Image 1: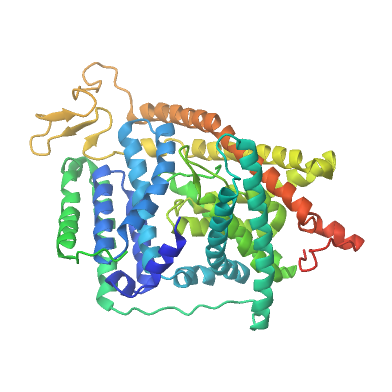
Image 2: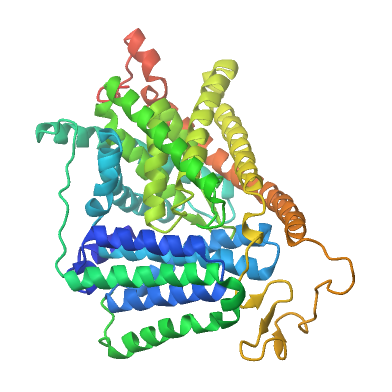
Length: 268
Length: 280
């Protein structure tokens, strides 16, 4: 997982998704999630998926990264689906639900710096949880960098060999043990630095305002449309199911329009 | 690898809402306990251990869809209330990165927190029984037993969800026949994907079965199949995780024993060199 790339995308300035207020994007995420919860129609879910891809492209998000991240839960959902779904169609629905929900969450993460995502959670959980949440994200960057270097060192010093799995495992575990000790020291140093800088038990993040009201409206309206479609097709399933093929069409048209009109160079 | 990789919208609402309620109450209590016992200075350690678990859980072992959790190590290092908070933090960040469902976040926190608490308790208990010289076998055994137990909990949760995923319609494509019905001339034209679009209904035979009963049978079979798959694939993951946990805890015990046995060393005034900056 390339957290650095996620953070780079979140902190850029271009695209309407990054201009929208974090709270609007979180509300939209909740609405899309409600649509995913409501719908058991594979074509409605396909429409939501294509709509999310269109939004991501229009919002200048790195779509290769977004789709890779969204595909990761699909792999695990596939294991669950194959193991428990009574038929292939239900399995497809389960996987589509995983991909849609993940893509919606990833769209928010790729367009919003993490302190603004965690700010609403900070308000409802005890102070220690909110602080640790913010520090965890930062620590993840440091650990991923260090972990990469350690693995490279193990490989360069012939620690990882295919024909000696026991030795490889032992050396890799030692490397992880070293990483753990490094982490503990880092935590202690962090605490000392925070105390010196006046930390008294609360990290505060101020809410970020919208830079473009139209972007907020667009994000919310698109999410409401997704939820309305899912609810409509759920309530009138018997009548509307034969017409489910209509649902992805507007989303595909929107995607085609965005693909044609966007600049040739990928911002990623 | 024992937490739920079940997408949003598959489990029944009452189950995931209950998961969220239990999690919020547990995190609230853990937060209060943590603040009362002045472990605020442990916030960076909490963050670092959570990040370590996060890095492990987000690194997939291909091609088997495994990932290491490092939950037992986290539980041993953090102890009671902080383990619950760490489990919540890890699940929140994973959900935001699309790794786990947002609605199942509560249930996943319960599973991961149980894993951390049970793993740490078993590890400490086994070390008392076997002695510190046999730390690695103790860690191995504790991890395997913990993962087996939490996997059982996961299967139990899926069983509790009952017919959830099978009771609803799945769209224009009929799941019984896997055929698309023509929306314009209903029933005149149909294309089977895996069959010829045969009519599977019992209409006219006088042996009609209520849809609910039929689905209930399917759901029971599904849970059994899920349990079979999980308990066939699971042990490989348990052993992998247990080997890593045993090796890492063995290494830490050798290099920085104060991290594992800090309280005992503090009482005796025997802080090993290198542990000066570490406090429990």
